[in-house]
Every structure is written in C-alpha cells, then in structure tokens.
Image 1 (tube, rainbow, N blue to C red):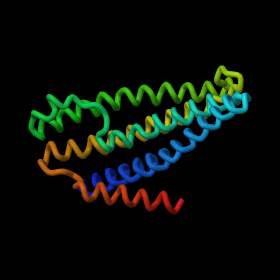
Image 2: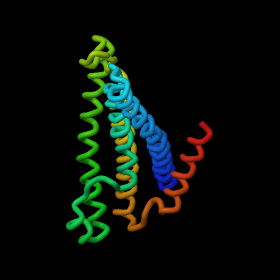
Image 3: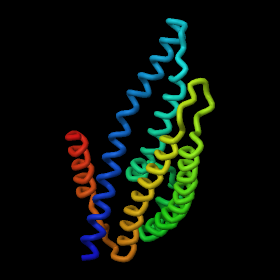
Image 4: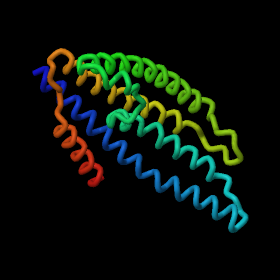
Length: 191
C-alpha cells in the first residue's frame, strides 16, 4: 500500500514536471522572435519598440524559473562530483536527502516572499519601471508556481532517495520514469 502510494505520487510529479518543462520550452522560439523583432525594428527600420525588452525579460524569467524543476528531475543542477562519485549509494542518498532539505527550505522562503510580493502587486498595481510599464502581478505568481513545482519535484526525489536508503532498492526504475515522461509528452500533444 505504502509502496504503491509513494510510487504513484512520484510518477505523477515526474509527469507533471516533464509536461510543464516541455510546455515552457516552447517559449524559447517566442523569446528568439521577440529579440529578432526588436533588432529589426531598431536597426533596420530605426523604430525601436517600448515593449520588446520587457517582454523578452519576462519570457526569459519564465523559462529559467519554470524549467528549474525539470532540470532537477534530469539531475542537471550543480553537484560536487569529486566527493559524490567516490562514495557508496547509501552516502549518495544521504547527501541527496540533505541537499533536498536545504533546497526545500530555500524554496519555501522564495514561495512565501513571492506570495507576499504577488499580493502587494495586486493591491498596489506594481508595474515594471520602464517606458512601457507592464504589470508585475503575473511575474510574482509565476515565481510561486515555479517554486511550488520545484518543491513537488524535490518531494518526489526525497521520497525516492529515502526509500532507497531504507530498502536498498529504487522506488522507481528508469523505465517507469521514461514512461512518465512519455505520458506527459502525449498529454501535451493533445492539449
């Protein structure tokens, strides 16, 4: 029962993170288009826009923040390999658990601060200090969504490492993780 519950939680989180990561990756061509549009408008037509810089800044922020959980899932974040690769799997699990706790603590603080900033942005109509002056509400909400998604991924990683630490066996095998990623991809195609 516990095994099944933990497995389903981890598979669900893995699929959600893949889906959001792949959906967010679609913003990369949009970012390239906005930057190219501004370059053409500024240097060829000599009519720069007032919005392109802010839009590109927001898109870049969305990509960086929303793909953090995807990078965590793919183990793409920085690690001290010289120490990590020279210890047993048990020690690796302990290192991972400690780093997930520290990262989770940091992300909870980020979530709380961004939530407060989102409330202030709504109440006081915060705007970016630029000529175009777009609202900042969406940005703080996105930071909350990104930190919550990252916390979900850390919870799945934490449970997997804890399970392996106590049982000596992985909670999910590589094929199950690939199936979760494939399911998320198929779900994104239908949307």
